[in-house]
Picture 1 (cartoon, rainbow, N blue to C red):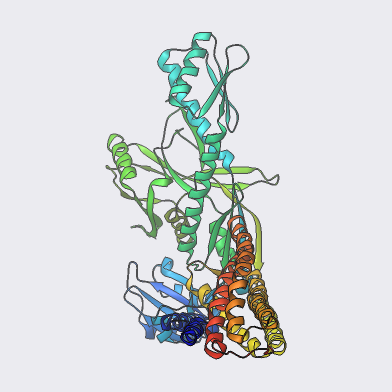
Picture 2: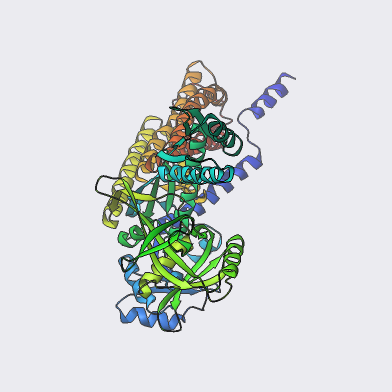
Length: 607
């Protein structure tokens, strides 16, 4: 009876079910397949989208590029796009320029990076790890969103409403002054008018705080909660607009994210010509359509045309650029460049109603752009680019002329198609990292990783001997899984600090094994058998390992949540490294040890 009990106890020690080994093998195999494409890297490519017209034939594209001295690696033609993969990465921009003379619509050309891994791996859905700006090279912009202009627009809207209230109620001598972007002063002559203003603001504009000023004047200030809400909405909408603009530019792998309260950081890895990106990203262009007015016909203002002559228009536009859903440049009947505009349904209705009631009258098209002066203050330039007589009722589609050359018309169409910004943005910082420096960062970073990994493997093999080789196998599996996860997770980007996180993970991964092995040695010193020492060693070390990794994981999560760019890259690799090191250090190591020494009843074994 005692013999059966001992045999049963021996079987319980260090036993894994078959399904656990299957899970372990399958997981490592999938992660290995996911990590392999990173070894091959990526090739520079130019993509032609089949938006309006079919792309030229592959043979014609290859002949055109080879005539310009550009070597083509392969051309993949699909129903919706054609991808030209280049042999030399430095010829990507040149290839796009050459193809722009072949393709009718330049907006269909896109700079891209195509995986160099075998097609059978790509067909399985595995792709290389996306590299950050500091590893691939490219350009970074820091943009400042001028929120004051949004507050000012809200104040101007309230001021117009108050003036209409004065006219409607016959309040004479009342004036509205905008003392600051988010402050108004309403000067009235009596307490009745004061009460009327306060009541109107309380019911119609509850987001504004009304207080009494000198005499019967009313001081209006935007509430802090409303300012915060407006700031968040404005920055978020500008983020979306920037992403659209970058897509229109044809730049892939871009990172656009908020930084601080009112700034946007844009990273464009792989961009070799930052000037083109800067011209579009830094511009805040929008169109607005105004009714042309005569002197003394309501609320008007003067804007200058391209010749510098004043044009009197209504103070409020008929329609803003936010209703534009598409804009394309083309040549008109007279051979002049024009922009064909498509509006959304609400914008089309507004334009249709206005044009129906104003056939035969002129309508002006205004082009607005923001910038900064020498003192850093935001400046706005408004220019009338076209004044045309409305010949008939307009709808959702119409065209504007007077846009200048074809290149200028295409640039304007690109900006309008990507969307108008809700607040002006200006570039306050620009950094460029060359592809050579990026390649050097990769070489140095992975050299440090290789050196750290090699020294760690040697130490574990010498110090722990047989168990050390188990730790080394687990460590290599850990690195495979970590690279595989980085390639699998959408949006994950490897940066130079991320490589530092990989190096740190090497040390933390063997930390797990060191704790377990030291506990096993302690149990052997107590006189237990090898099988018992393994069982007790793993059981007693798990709590310590979990506590240590959990506290570090908190740090990684906080860094990722509040950090940006390189800091997030470090936090990501650190956090994923913690998960993979626990999986391989506890689960994989235990699986190997169970197979080799799991039933070893010897005592006083040196490990």
